[in-house]
Each structure stands twice: as structure tokens, then as C-alpha cells.
Length: 344
Image (cartoon, rainbow, N blue to C red; front, side, top):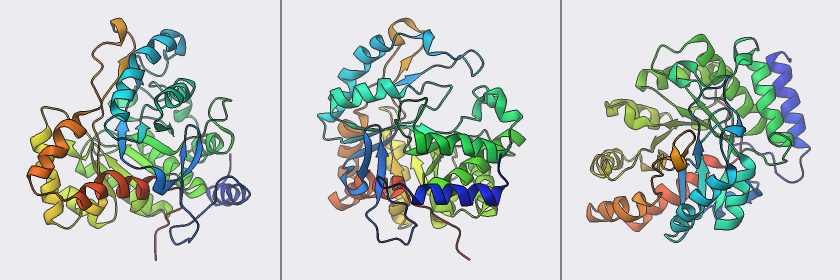
């Protein structure tokens, strides 16, 4: 659609013309914003934030995916009590990580945001893991620049004609080495970041795949701080977590469950000992209404962090300042809309 340099130039010009959302760089003094389902919001107003959760998921695959496969009203009735329960724990912002072709329904999310009082953030991008089951066919025929143009258009004009805009880019890969299509969507995400300032959340198979992603970002000219390594707990060797954080990547331990509380305390203790907590995000990857299962299946609550992890962290010496860092300051910094370019 555009040569890469021309695509970036056009995206930058288009963003500079927006009056509702300041276009900022990492060095800008403008007030930083995040984009919620309901519009832009000051990043420092996010409050306690869960950075990786789900309301709805459909694992049928991209070629069979359709919103006709579920009753949105039934999803709403199932999810709303869980979200209200979460809101009552003190959570203010909920990041929904279900991407296109895997359960993204922004009208449903807007209705749930209005009813629950939570700030909800949705995404653009495509999911390349699980052997590319959730990638639409056009990924294989379009260039990275063309894919980036699709995602950038959602940021400028809204998703699927709704006017609702994404607040981050969600992609994913399997373990290294990445496939051609997976490398393409990571490149497209980097180009979209350059044109919009949206942060990339990348579901990642292992540490070697995370390193390969960083190399792609740097080759495109994007700083590693623009990427969140989602599901970093899937890599058992913490040297990868430490190296990623030292490069200013966001390292997300986002699989907290009742069964994994102790292991997550261990991850966070190690990152604390390395003085790297300022690069860490924590969430649950919980929910969700599972399309195809009776009544949506086993909808897991969103309250494990509030009810189990935080008390355990306090028992292990985590201070109020450190908890605010993990659940307030770091999410605000990670999701702030600003272009993060590679230095030098």
C-alpha cells in the first residue's frame, strides 16, 4: 500500500492533526494519554489496572469466526457480575486482550464498561500463535505495511465502523524461530507503533522468540520499551526476563491463578532483587465466556490478584510503593500513547 518510509510519514502527519489525542514522543512534555473504549483518558488516571484479561474468546479459528456464533446479551449477563466484583476490589482499568478473529467485540465491551464503571481498553492487531490458526488469509498476501495500514486505520477511524478506538496492539507468536507470517505481523506491529504510538503486547512462546521480536523492532527503528512480553512466565529461565527488562522491555507475568500465586511471588521477588520491578506488569489472563461451551463454560473470576496475590506479596515484604508500581505506575507508563523510537 505504501513503501515503509512513506507509510510512517503519512501516519505521523495524520496523528499530528488529531486534536482529541496529543501525538507525543517518549521525550515529550505533553500530558500522556491512554485510549479506552470510551475515548482518551489521562494515563495517570488509570489507577489500579489489570493489564491482560479477557471477556470473550472463540477458538474456532479465523476462517470460521463470526459474531453470529454467540449471543452478546448472554455474554453481557455472564461477564458483568464478574467485572462489578472486580471493580469492588478497587480496580479501575481492565485491559481486554481478545484480538480480532478471537473474540474482540467492542460494542459488548463498551456496554460492559458503561455498566460496570471500569475503564476498558481494547486492541488492534492479529494473533499469530497456535500455528497461525487465528490469522485471516489476507495476512499471507499483504505486506507488513498493508497490515499496519489496516491497524492504523482502526486507530484513526475506529473499529468496524463503531468509532471505538484501540488502546494497544495485540499480537502473538509461537516459540522461535518465528515463521514468515509471525515475523510479518511483528513488523506490522512495529510500523503501527511508529504511526500511532500504541504499545505492542506480544503473546510469546519462549525467551528465544522474545529476543527475535526485539531484533525485529530494532531493525524497524522501534525501541524495545514499546513492547510488552506477554506470558513471560512461559519461559522458565529467568535470565531471559532479566535481559528483557534490562533492555527496557515490559516483562508481564500475566498468568496469575490460585494455583500459581507462589510461583508469581517468586518471579516478582527475583525481579525486585535485580532492581527491575519498574519494568514489570502483572495480570491474570482470566475470564472468559468461551464460545461453543454451554453458558460460556468455566468463567474464572478476576479477583485472584486482589484476594490472594497481593496479601501474599505483603507477607513477603512488598511495600505499598512497590505494589503501586506494579499495578498503577507501570501500567500507566506501559499503555501511554507515545512513539518510542530506537536511540542511536
